[in-house]
Structures are given as structure tokens and as C-alpha cells.
Image (cartoon, rainbow, N blue to C red; front, side):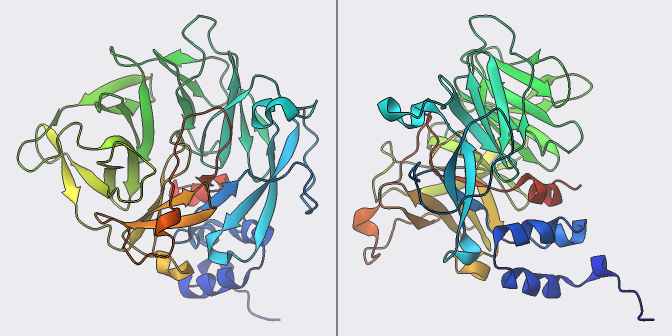
Length: 381
């Protein structure tokens, strides 16, 4: 009888070699579902680009949708580690995506509100639902509290995969933040005095939120929802001035909580420069300190700014570049890598074509996303 092998104990180098030989996204998911160490082998692989710009009558084969009440339409999923293979998936069919030519089965008055941990989030008035891009599973929270201020307008996000402990859905209205603990039958309302928080990330197991006025909060989910503001000093002792960056994102990268953005007031032009600042809590008050290099990390920013930016370790593994912010050129359909702190070089072949478009509209735009199953390996599960 052959000796039993400890498959969960295979060395990372061997697991990475196996991953590189897998030829399809279903194979990757099956590999990752085997055990936690195998899921962890994906920690240095890039996020996936979901491209909704697919004809409703496309002749390509798309996987069969689950038998659910939500109508679907095709989309492409691009794996940067295997860009020659375009993977196919399906997402909810919204009437807003097709204008006057919408199919009769399309969801009317529903709008895209955000995406995180493998799920897209949609809403219409007080109704919202979450859709797992890769499994087709839908989750419907209870109706939002019925008042004139509770319609989701500014975005929505998850604090972790649905299967993780104490996972919450956070939605942003014009005036408030509402919190739904996954599996519960009610919402909680909590927000700063001067409006709702609009940016959320999970850093070292703690949820952080930022408002449009750049105020920073720790968001405590238990035993009850409450916000703890982090005092920040601006423009002193080499720290960033408050309005130095235009429409910045909060980004978790390695062991840093970053604020990433550019100085330009006109996103989309080719000469604007991305900068990053890390929060330094060793001082009181805290301050944002400039980061000169991302070292062996890269950051991915979606076309819809309500989607959480993602970071990737060792992008050279799939042909990428470290110390870069990756954006998607919506008009010409290609990736653009901005080296941190530098404009695109004059001899960049794509320079004249670059148009980086970010929005907060109702339609689904190209976004970066990681399957919820793979998010668990980063969530400590």
C-alpha cells in the first residue's frame, strides 16, 4: 500500500507551479476549494477584470445560469495570469445597461451600487441584493428602513466574504450609513454627524471608513455598531495636506493603509501622477506620510470608484510591474500601468490613447474583482 501523502502540506513552490498549468477559471476555483493552504497559493496572483461590454446576442458559449429570479446577461472575465483566454460569466441584466433597447426581462429601476469580496451589489429604492459573480448565488437583505433618506445612492460594500464571521453589508445614502449583519433580519443606522462615510476597507481585521471631508474612522461592528474617529493632523511635519489628492481611494497594500489618488482635477488626462500616503498612527494625532515606492506590490483601480481597489504581490509573476497603479482604459480596452509618482513615459506606445474613466453611475463598468472563495484566504479563514 502506498504511503498516504499530506496534500495540504505541499510546498508553495510546487503549488504555484500547478496553478500556472491550470487552463481555466473553473479549474482554478476547484483547486482553491481543496483546502486553505491551496487557497493561499493564490495570494500573489492578480485580481480578475470583469468586462460587461459584451453583446447580449454574443455567439460565445456562456455557463448556464442558476435557476433564480434574477435575469442574467453575459460578461467576460479576464485573468491577467492567462490573458489569452477570455473566461465567460453572467451578471444581472439591468434595463439601464441597454437604454431604449432593453430586453423585456431586464430588471427595471435597479442600479449597480458597488462590488467587493466577489459580490456585486444592486439596489432599487429600499430593495437591494448581492450577486456572486462566479457562482450566481443571490442574497437578499431585508428592506431598508422606509424613510426619504434611506435610498442607496453613494455606494455599498461588504466587510468580508459572506461566509466569514460577523460579515456586514454597509450601504451609503446621502445622509446615513446603514449596516446589515449577514443573516440577520434588520438594519442598523450609524454615521458621523456631517454625513455618511463613503470609503471602506478592512485593514488587519479592522474596518476603516473615510468621509468626503477626509475624516477617518474605525468602524466597530460588535457588540454594536459605533464609529471611532481617528484624529489626523494635516500639512505639518511632512504630512499630506488635506486636499492634496483629488477624489482619493483607501487601499490596503501589504502592511499599510494607504490613501491613493492624483493631484490632477481632471481624471482621464495622460499626464496626471498617482501618489500614495500611508496612515502613521505612531504619532498623536495620526498623519498621512508619503510612500515613495510600493516595493513589490501593485494596485488595481476600477472604472467605478465605489469598487474597492485591490493590491497584488509580485505582479512580475504574470508579466506585470511592481510599484504601479493599474487602471483600465475604457475607450480602447487595454490596461495602463502608472508607475507611482511618475507620469507615463513619453515613449509609451499607448500614451496618446489613454483615457482613464471613473464614475459613480448606475451602469456596470469594467471592475476588478476577486472571487469570494479566494478572499477567504486573505481573511484568515
